[in-house]
Length: 115
Length: 112
Image 1 (cartoon, rainbow over the protein chains, first blue to last red):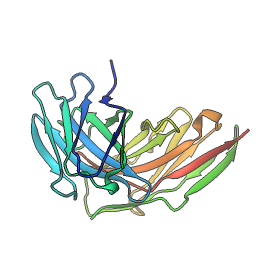
Image 2 (cartoon, rainbow over the protein chains, first blue to last red; image 1 turned 120 degrees about the vertical axis):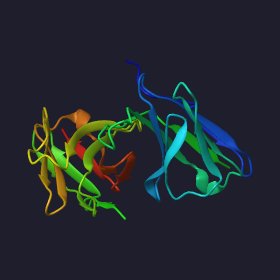
Image 3 (cartoon, one colour; image 1 turned 90 degrees about the horizontal axis):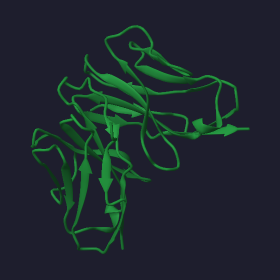
């Protein structure tokens, strides 16, 4: 089975721009979660989607949004980029049906640099 | 709020020796899951081992095993017969529903 894939792998943007990151889960997985990893804040949960609905949300401003499509692929959007948004964005997928029992498997991440 | 604490920012071990990484967590939940992930320089987050909180038996996966003390809210990882490929950042994580809460990580160096 193919693993979780994320595109693009690297991205450079300037302040004020917006960016869209994509995540394709493992086949059969319906839950997709997004995490931000920075040296200062570590790994933080952004949100989780299941069956095209946002099911869980972390403490991030409204500039961070996401969506999920009927094939379970997910996109994350960040609008009005700030320097502090520079980070590794990790996507993880799981079956999502067992009230937290399912293991999350991670993609390789998208490295976003904001100049 | 759930918190996960890894008190060892860095650890080192001789190749073929055993090392234990510590992790404590705080929660009021009764039904949760615990994980250890490793992140090598490639930055790919790789599952090492998982533990269900309702299971008393400690999980093992080949050279990796955990010491799960539910009352103490402690979840340490033991790596036996350390290999060069074990060098990585190790993150302890706590999961309720689909939200993972991570510790700050322990950087493990393997000395040849």
